[in-house]
Amino acid sequence: MAILKIARMGHPVLARKADPVPEPTHPEIRRLVRDMVDTMEDAGGTGLAAPQVHVPLRVVIFFVEGERAAREDGEDATGEDARGEDGGVPLTVMINPEIEPLGPEQEAGWEACLSVPELAGQVPRYRRIRYRFTDLEGKPQERIAEGFHARVVQHECDHLDGVLYPQRMTDLKSLVFSSEMRHQGQPEMVD
Ligand code: NI
Image (cartoon, rainbow, N blue to C red; front, side):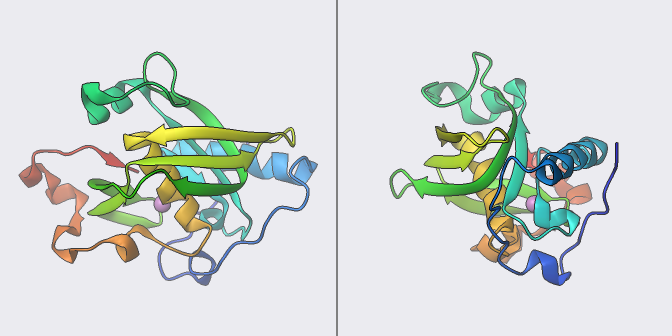
């Protein structure tokens, strides 16, 4: 078990485009993912991208708690995506992921980031996406996501292109300290 140091906004590794992983089944990738899971669990995040632990490779991990997905997506979630019966998405390891928006519709939601500590902001994201990736066994995977699930995937994949959520914000007025968010009625957010 290894908990890795998390890079914060301003470190160049978060601003560059990460490199594709040529060999997803390589033992070094498996070890990196294990350390990323330990680090994400220790930090209490919902996702983590390799550049956040100073590794400029296209590797992302995330999960969505069922209770949380249900709460944030409401009853109009169709359930035709990768989510389980409770609306959650189990821990997913994505190597070389790619996102394709399904329709132009975007919606704003609160996000936070382990690399931008103590802050939160409202970020517009595509409501529905298709995403593809290679798993740790080297197999290609494809999923449809919407709502909170789609938001998490877009946030994490942005890290692979050197983009942090404040760069996606259209109104910096909603960039706030998380500790002040009680004034906003404790909104739920990606972290
Ligand atoms: Ni982040």
